[in-house]
Image (cartoon, rainbow, N blue to C red; front, side, top):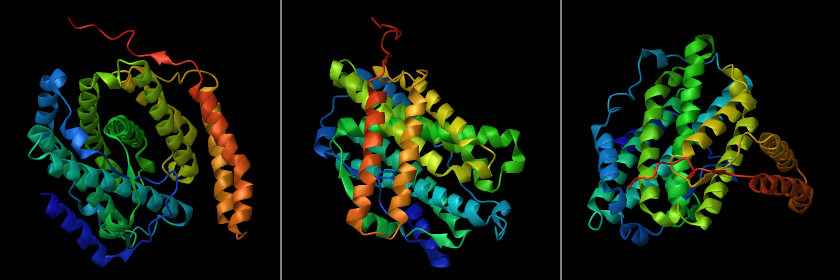
Length: 359
């Protein structure tokens, strides 16, 4: 199944121009590797029943027939032009790259665990299946605009970042759950305001986001199976750190792409707030501690980071020497670092306090 899907993704590039990948920055999706031996040695017995239930959901493959393009895609799409077109292509590219990076990580985990953790290997194979479908569907959408990503090139040339398994579990759980809320909120908005549905891809978001939700549930099981990830004081610090990292990245990305959200009738600021608040609330089911997104300083400080990020983008786009650019960037980098530190130090919410105790 994975081979067939990847072939379809590569075939799409033959009928469209190959898009030069965006320059790697802190906001571009990362490609990850991890300690595969450590994953193989994980004891999952505390969550065995929950693990088998989640994998049964993945095996059911509810979306096996979902990612099929219909006649609504058969247009030239010249009506999407200017800044809206640029912003939409950027959305497609980053989303495709993110899904494809997940596919590569999950596929390798499945391969490395096959003879050591067969059930876990199967789970990662099923996750890779879903991510490949998503990436292929997004890459095919890009061909409607005369472009396509060379996924083989990305595989060989993208920088790979090493994360220990604990970090992978935290970050992938969050990326899947925030992905759910990003997709479902756009879908619900466009159901109410179909006049803003500029492209048929958005009709697929309701079922699509359920894949994200199931993936998040799987990583929640992994997290809760490892007591050190939730029952130690260090776990509370790490949980809040990764929440802040994901929320800050989301804020900077959404406000940087504000023209895209404007084009579909969504307020970028309000959308960003709702996605973060709902993801933070969802994370209480897995994490020992979460951020206080209701604190009056929370969003203003994140938005100050977004303003500083815009300044950094402006500096990067000028023609001054790199050394001059670096000197110009330092004050704005300091602004981002200071604001994130202030957010991190705000009072947190103890997610374990209201969790029922099972005897």
